[in-house]
Image 1: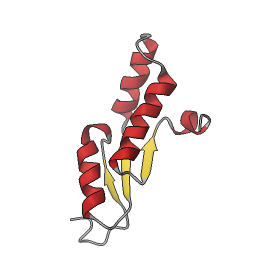
Image 2: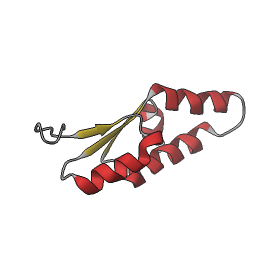
Image 3: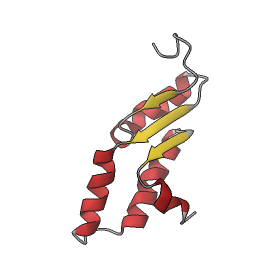
Image 4: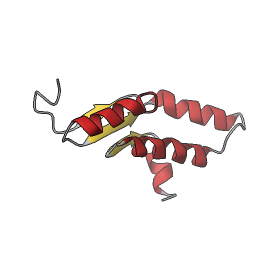
Length: 87
């Protein structure tokens, strides 16, 4: 409906659980696709890191890479500042 109403960008949120929706939107619409990695996705990775279960930067990068590979043109994430220093 957003595309029919003249949206300039389509946003999918939460991003990770809807990678298939991001891909479908990318394949179906001639608009930029934004993905929002919501606070729950961010806090899940951060909490696992605090427990010593994973490397924060590597897991954050893998998560963001999967969103990009699904077709997102823009990614909104709470990891933006941290990841921008790594790339």
